[in-house]
Image (cartoon, rainbow, N blue to C red; front, side, top):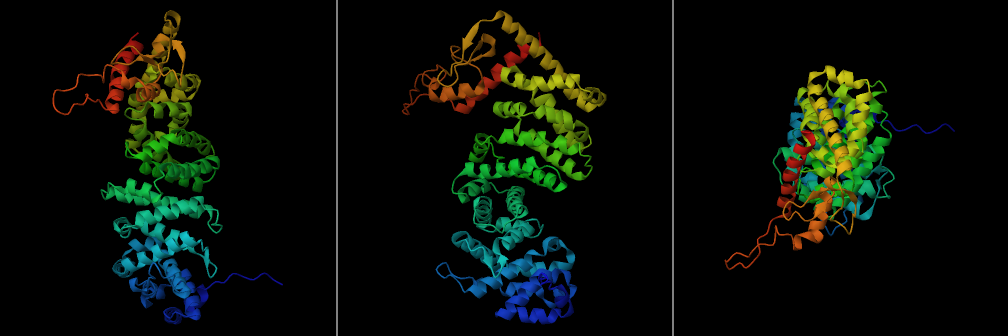
Length: 514
């Protein structure tokens, strides 16, 4: 027997659109079949817009029809709501087209009911793991619905302003990422769920919302680490198969989403990003880009990806960020910048300027740290020996950044060689965890007491929290005579900033003026 051909409702709906619309209004088995056919193809049948297809979908998504929390709802009404959401989701970019203004206005007027149904169906799926309704995957429709609406200039802000929308999308995203019960979700749908989360955060930032990151963590059960474990897993998977324009497009979005997820520096999301090895993972993704360029891909996808990469690193390598710089250098950041330099030079002027700023202003101060210098040195040596150096020297913008960096590195290398010849040995003050023994000038003293030395800022932070702050003379001060009766307290951030400023100033002077 020949294989059964898939059902294509387009010819029938095109032939009799008014009949399908009239039948889809009635909640009956025949009406449900007509509604699913209409939802699948109405956007391709011009007459259905004038005949009120959107009005049919809205009629099944009225607020008063949403089951209460104690009511499981009639199965048929859930089917009609699900099919109607599929119909609205198919509007995609037409949500912003002038020809659909009337339909969009009706959606805005009925939005409380539409979102209430989307919320109810999502919650019911998450709680019961009902994967299908009459053979139609439920999460498929919900993810497409939220993704298309959040991309709309008209509906995106409305989603952000809707109470509970961000929390609901976070739950959908987490379930889609971790649940083993969702066999009907393709890799592209899981990406769409992640993309929708990123768009909601970006829209929230543009509208001046300041609480979205707290709400995001709360919706994920308070587990900030879980958020980045899921997100970085997607980044690693995409990096391994960076072979098509679609993969390049996805990686660009992941860079944008990570940037939005952990933008507030003191937030738990930023800490979770670093604890999960986020900087190393993102740098390795950046290092994979030259391989995609070498495949003669000339589309704008690579340029868009490089733009997102430059924006990401410019944001997360600036400031007092020793660990970010160190992890990025060890993962091959400088090598990737060198290999991608011809394409970076062709980006927008603002993006090229940011890439130059990283090389000229952000990286050189950290060369005073031996660990950073040793991570950077192989790439600098490779640059000196490669044919790319001649190309970079010919470009005045990049030459202004690369050549001083090479000069600084040479001076720092000479300074380190001199230190190794004349200086004695010292042990790191973080003796319980580190115990590194090295030349004296490879360590930096606590600038308050000048009696304890550390090999790196992170060792100083660990020892300060565990031991040193209890007796360091910088915090042991006479108590004020006021009734408070407390010792003067210097916040940990001040100690760290003082250390960075003073040590960097002295070491830069010593290393680069020899």
